[in-house]
View 1 (cartoon, rainbow, N blue to C red):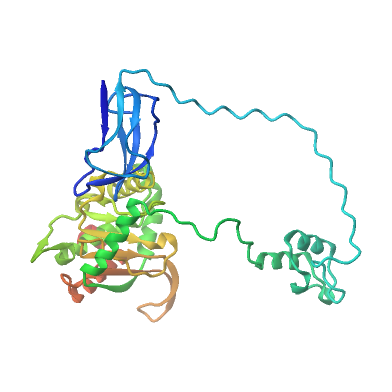
View 2 (view 1 turned 135 degrees about the horizontal axis):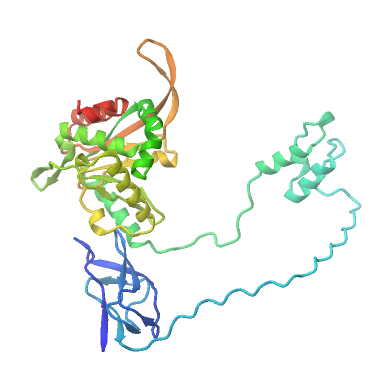
Length: 402
């Protein structure tokens, strides 16, 4: 009996996908629920399981093709005996071979090679060897030894300063954009065109949070099985600020404003395929450990492409951390239809004037908040960011809600 493999429902508002990879070929045996084909949507990668056991008769859609929900991908002959894919043969053991004879030394040239220093700049034998191996022109090396002699270190430093040779290959390569990358491009452009986007900045002293992590990290990790990171502090600080400035947690729908009394915080995660934003639901009801566990799980599954559609939809506010990549300051772009996004950045020691007039080196982080000025006024945006700053510099405010 022939059983069709169809494109399953892919989630709210997702109607198309791209066939990324077939795991089986026609004629091969399959078992029920075994992954058959990988589909790539604009949000997640989905594996379609075999609906029955048997043999794969045919493939209807080739890799790289676009398909709609419900389309037939292939056909299984239920109950048929298919072939089993052959395992790759192990590489034969290498026989012991006698060591190759050393090549005869090359005859010395009558004239000094280009990489040898001129008479006016004597060169040590080891420096000559390094320059010959690295292709360094001795005339370009400034000797630091006695009488301008080029030393081994001079040769090594000069070689390190040279540009690496251009790799072999074509000057250009054209690669089709993935469906995820296309969707990211579309959403970012839509956010710029459809929102009155502005960004406000502040800086926060991370000393108190860093001290708290230092004091409780070991016990926290033993008890909860996850490290106490910075993101849980910022998620909780944002919830505190969102309660006080509800417009930052709202959404424009036509001529209406929808104020949301729940706090689903999106956490931006960078993967090889692109940026995804899984959502931590009801952050106000979660403790620090639960937030860290959720973020840790999302991060691992995002890099493996195993996030579900539900985990990537919704969200009332987003946090992104460019600091993990070394960013000192940036202007994050809105994750529409959300009216606000907080950008964290690299922690850097900077001299700060303290309240008593003294100067101390403090671990400082620049914060950036982009917001939709159609719904969030400048006063609200600035006040929101100041509230986040206060909560991070005094973490007890989060616990006591003060």
